[in-house]
View 1 (cartoon, helix red, strand yellow):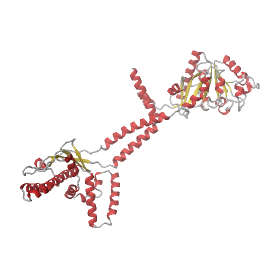
View 2 (cartoon, one colour):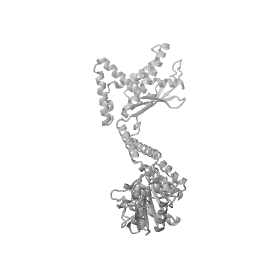
View 3 (cartoon, helix red, strand yellow):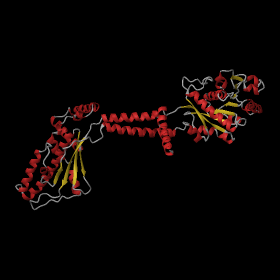
View 4 (cartoon, one colour):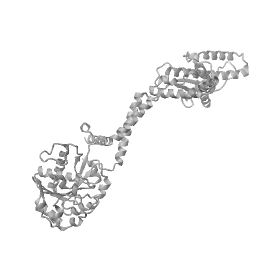
Length: 532
């Protein structure tokens, strides 16, 4: 069961990373698949036909002289000879390959590739316009020889073996087999011609062996159309013998077909997409999950608030607090805070962030609404942030900013006169008159006394103050409260920034109660999350 849960978690982590960077994954997928498809459209399938050659070692023994061939370096020499000019020339002449159209490949390829082949053929035709007929014939013949030489592959069957193969590629499987047979027979003819030349020097032109070899050459020349030979004819009297002819079976393209290539491309795109998603995720130093809060900040995760949609109001309705995922999230967060209050006997919290987000005051307001409405306890929200009146608690509840806290601390108003009742069990103390530098006011004994008084009058006191990255307000106020709750914006604030910002709080021994993740986006779609 434990292994199952681990694999389930690993799968969800994988899906979370992929869906979090879905644009990267989709871009990689599209680029690779389109590239593979276009690549296949621009590639003409090639077929390969193969002929097996045996280096017999000795010529016929009808005469006194024997020509030792044997394996090893002689076989390597014979392999090199296959692509020599005399052999290639005879094959080109026999098959009239020089008469092939310049756009020969076009009939075997796709429409897209055919367009480029036609364009290249027209360009080559233009180059030949200034040539004479002989020059044109010489050019086409040389071109055919180069093409054929490039399409021949000679490969030794095994180390120190007396056998090797001659493989010929072409766009048509039947043509590939014909050319392979013709090339191999041209090679055998060349070998016999070399034997005859040597024998003539010793025995003259009328020697019976020479006559028989010349007869065999004539028979082979008749078969330079690529038609199959009998096994006896293929073996022949030469010191190199054809032991396996091309053709006779169904041939498949040398390279993977379009379907196979697309499957391979699909697998490659998925693997590369996942790898790049993990790479982007590795370099993404923002908070992306509850696990990040617990791992990098070493504090408790109190809950998350999803990204607010158009139909969600910033402040939830007290009459209907479970109508959306947005409102439901505040109920979950509030319940977690309420349980902590009861278990640890806490009743005053600073709720702040590290970036000065305008959403923090909405979080404070909604938590206050839920605690007052659901827990049926008396809640007071104090705005101790006179620097940001426009984004203060008063603006969220649409009440007057002045008078407020600063007016009470300066003796210009009484607490009872400026505290505002928002609803059953919920009251708000606005920030009051704005101040550029309220540090002295925050450090005054009057503020600490006021907070102590409110803690005795209310079951919960929620305090809004300036962000902890740019100001020390939270560190000062933490001496008067039971702890600090951090609001962290998912995907917007770097982990290192928040980690550095809470250092002064930790050095002072502040009780950092936990973190709330806002603007939460669930990367994995709900249906997939349920299936996994």
